[in-house]
Image (cartoon, rainbow, N blue to C red):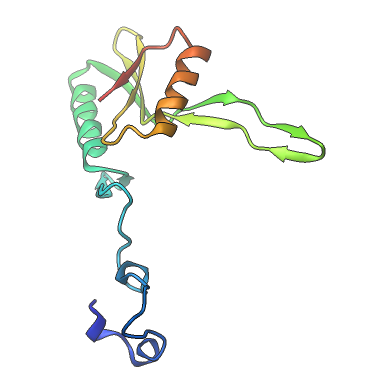
Length: 139
């Protein structure tokens, strides 16, 4: 949908010098911050093509018997919720992309990263400090 094809009721609201990006208009797909493309596999929407491809690879390994189970978005509490002066502070949670259990029972966690943000790097440090015995992998 382009600017020239907007319904008449929206044309009145948008000036030619408008700073409203086209992606914010009804019927337009939003632009994602890091240029990733939401990709669907087996009815599951993944945040990136890279994550979806990794999942497809895990499914193949599961069919061959090398992987027993795959869990999506496992969570780790890095800091529990608490309260200060009556104000509730939410917990800090890290979500990996996958928890993989291999045929022999070994468990590892995977995060597929295209962009290693400062928040991600900080949470990764906290994760490895609090859970030093986990097998954590980046893809």
